[in-house]
Length: 187
Length: 365
Image (tube, each protein chain N blue to C red):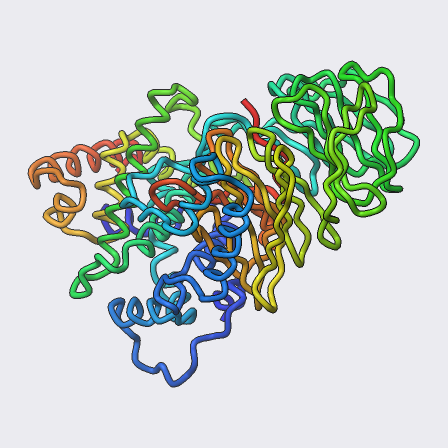
C-alpha cells in the first residue's frame, strides 16, 4: 500500500489477481495505461536503482542512471522484442552506464577511490558498512559482475551477454572479486 | 558466502531511496508515451500551423525565420537515441543559476553546487562573471562564490532584474510596476518608466536598448541612456503578458500571456497573434539563443506540452518556465510541483534528465 501511496497513484485494482507479464504491461503502456506504467516502474525500479548505487556508490548518479535507463526503455518500446523480459534490457543499460560513469569519474579524478561518497551515517549498520566499503574497493567491472550475479541472480553466461564480454572473463572477475571480498570481510 | 553476500547487497542502505523513487516516477510518468500513439493532437498541430503563419506573415522567404517556419511545418525526424551521459552533470556546456526554497545556487557543469544565499531571484551578468540577486528591496551584485560586490536599496521591492548585453547596465522591475536602471557597478540608480508587470528584456546586439510593456499595454523599445524611443508597435500586447523574449538577432520580439503570444517584427513593423488551442493556455515562451525558434509551453486539461519546432515533451506536471541552454540544444523546464528541473534535448536524440531545483534563473558560460 505504501508504495502506491508514495507514487500518488491508485492501487492496482483487485481484479488483477493474476500478475501481468512485462509484455502485457508494455502493450498497455503504449495504449496510455498509466497503471501499467506504474506497475512496471514498481517492479523494476528498486532493482535497477540499487544496482546502479552498488556499482557507482554515488546516490545522485545512481538515481540519474536508473532514471535514464527507464526513459531510454520507454523511448524505444517500438523496437523492443516482446518475447523477451524487460529486466535484462534495463540491466544492460544500467550497468553499462554505471561502469562508464565510474570510469569517467576516475579519469576526472574528482574523488579518489578512498573518498567515494558514502551513505548517510545515521542509516548505516556496521555489517552493511563493511560490505559497502569492501565493494567500493573493487573495480567497477568487478562490482558489476558481483551485483549482477549475487543481487540480481544472473548466470555467468547471462552476465557475459549483458556486458558483451567472454564468459571466461566473467568467471575470472567473479572469482577474483569474491576472493577479495572474502578477504576484506574476514571470511 | 554467496547467500550472505546477497543478503548484504539487498540490505545495504541506499541513501534517499524513497525520494529518488518519487522523483523518478514523476519524470517517468511525464515521459510516458501518449495514448495517441506519439502523434500530435490536432489542437497542437493547429497551434503550430498558426505559429508558422505568424512567421510567414512576418518575414520574406529565406530569412532567418524561414527556418523556424520550416521546422514547424516539416519537423525533422529525431535521430535514434545515443548513449546518454550520466545526469549528475549538466547536459550542456555552461553553468546554471537555479533557485529553490534554500535560495540561489550556481550549478557547475560537473554538477557541483555553490550556494549564493537566500535571495528571491537572480540573473547572470552577460559573461557569467557576476550574478545580480535580489531579496526584498535589496539588489546585489555577487561574485560566483557568493561574495557581495555591491548592494543597493531600491525604493520598492524588486521583482526581477536583467543585465544588459555589455554588462554596463542592469534594468530592474519593482513590485509597484516601475522599471529602474542602475549601472553595472551599482551607481546611478534612476527610474525609467512605469510599466505593466512583464519582465523587461534587453535587445540583443544593442548596447542599452530595453523592451518593456508600458502602462498603456503597448511595447516600448527605448535606449535607456538617451531616453530615445526606438519603437512602439501599434498592437497592444496580449492580456496579462508575463514575459518578453527577443530572437537572437534582435528582430523579433515575442510577448506571451496565458491566452496569446504576439510576435512583433521590430525591424520591418507588423505583428501577428497566436492563440492557444481552445481550453488551453500558454505558460511560457522563449526564443532559442542561436536561431528564431520559439519554445512554447502550453497547458491543457492537466497536461503540459512543450514545443520547439516540434513537440519535444509532455508531462502532467505544471511547467512554470523554460530556459534554453547556451548551445540551443536543451531546454531546462521548471516543474515546481515536482521540485525538480527537467532538461529536454531539443535537437537530435530525445533525452530527458532531471536535476534538483525549483526554478532556473539563467544559463551562462
